[in-house]
Structures are given as C-alpha cells and as structure tokens.
Image (cartoon, rainbow, N blue to C red; front, side, top):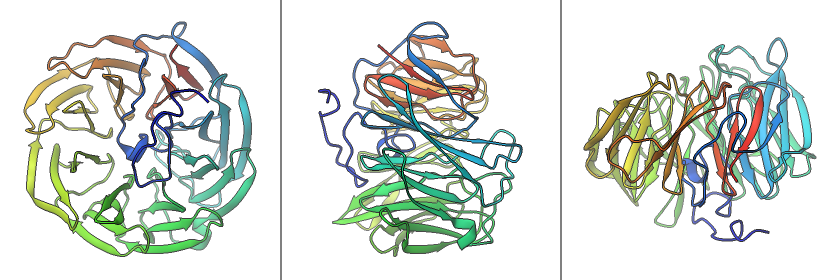
Length: 400
C-alpha cells in the first residue's frame, strides 16, 4: 500500500474512501476535486502516458478508481444492448475481468449517448453498475456477480428515448439510485448486500441527468437530488422528504457542495448557504456569465470554473461571482466536467483535447494543451498522482 493511498480518510457521508480513491461520478461527493499531488501537466498520443488499454466498446460513463482497480462500463451491439463491466489493474492497465449482460429495457438514445452513460460507483468490496436501459448489477472486486436487477422489469413504464445518464452514489450500506424519466420516476435506496429496496421516494415524471449529492445536516445524512422542479433533500435512512428549494432546478449538470454552500447551475451559477433545516436566505453569489452547458461547474481554489458548448472557459470568484475571465477557446463542445487537483484545473473537450489551467491565476493562461485525438465524453478520474481518461476506444492512465 502506498503512502498516498493510506493518507487521509475523507469525511463524506458516502462509503468510506481514502484520498486516492475516485469512487463515483466526479469523485468524492461529485465535487470534481482531488487532494492528489504531482499531477501531470503535459501529455499526448506518444508522451506522458503511463499506460493505454483498448476497450471492447464505446461508452460515455466515467472511469472510477478504488484501491488498485479501475472500473469502466461499455455498451455494444446494433441495439446497444450488450452491456459490459470491466476491471483493470490501476498500476499496469491489465484487464482483470470482464462481465457482460443483456439489456432488458429500451435502448433508444441520442446518437451521442450510450446505454453505458451512468457512471458506476465502487467501494472496497466491488462495483455497482447502472445502465441507461434500467439494468443494475453488483459485482465483487473479483468479478463475481453479487446481485442483479432489471428495473424496467420491476417498473415497466420506465423510459427515456434520449437516454438516461444520472449516476448512482453510495451512502453507507445503501446504493442511492436516481431514476427520473418519462415513466415511473423515483429515487431509491437499495441494500448493497442483497439489492432490495430499503426505501423508494416517488418523483415527478421528467427526463433528468443529474447525479445526487450527499451531506450531513444536524446528525442526519441527506441526499440532495435536483430536478426540473427544484432541489429536494431526502433523509438517506428513510427516504422522507426534508426540504425543497425550488430556485435550484437541475436537468443536466450537477451542483457542487463547498464551504457550506450549494453552488447550483441555473441560468449561470448561484450559491446558497445550507443550514440544518435547508437553504438559509437568498443566494449569496450569482454569476450569469458562468454558464456550464452540459458540463458541471467546478468549485476550486476560491473560484468557480465552467465550460460551455461553444468552448468558452469561465472563472468567477466563488464568494462574489465577480468575473475573472471568460475566454473563447478552440475546445469546441465539452461534455466532460472540469476536475481539479494539485493547483491545476483540467478541462477536456469532446475532441479529446485537455486544457491544463493554473487555479491560482486570475487571468486565462493555460499551462498546456494536450490532445489525445480520440472522442472523450466522460469526466476524467484522478487517483494515484494520475489522470484516468476513457475515450471512445481506450482507457488511459496519464502521469509519471
């Protein structure tokens, strides 16, 4: 076990994870921030790559890293109905195991998306993979199937012709499963051992691609889930609704929790203070210029960073919303959310180009522009002093 891996246990409400782990969508509590040091600055097709391994099929989900395992999902077949879960050795890139499922739900989706759109979530025992077809499976770290559920089999009206992408999260021994869609919509807590519902909270019908957040509030663990009608907080133990903030709707990008504030993307980015009973007062910060597009906003180093569909990279002060810069780059569209660590912000475009931006500068002055030359829609993971990037063809570990 490395010194980095053993360093610090993160104080989040999800399953215990060490600092080197990037166990879910956008890492610890979907913040997109890592404590790792010595992260890479420059790389390309033939430099700065520790290893590169081929993937059996396309996917737009993000890689997750726990311990020395990297988990990835893919989908293949003419109908996108062949569902794959893979585990790789984080040190060498060697494939450890591969499992395949047949989709039981509808597989229609936007051409840019995939049935492998929701990001899996993992802990030291294994991985939980949700697919846009409504198939949900749990595997142990060695690839043994622990349990499987066809959510469409349980709830036949589940449907989303564009494709689902909200990702599950772990809260202790519960897997929180978001299932907003055009049919029966709900947020459910599933027992991680047996795959049975612990609770199921009804939600309004409607397509939504937001991933839930988790926070502690007065001794209660809350699950915050944004949708078109606002952000709702649920008691993680019972599923009981605790509060609703209608001014923070969600649809595609996911909000961030930082310094007791909820930074939510709605007409730009705004921040409200959270107390034990929910939102306290009016927004303390609003920026209409920081527009995140499909990529979630990043709160890091006292700033909020966003990237939109036209390649505009924006930074504003996290406390005041004051514009620091809004630069039109040659990135083009970005679906991957910005991530950060070691004083650096990483912004990756759909073309596979990553800008490395110093977080401490108030002007736009990138350290490097790195091109992998392959499509990237999933957000990179940070672990072990490296970036893990999945493209449409390969999984990369970038770093020393």
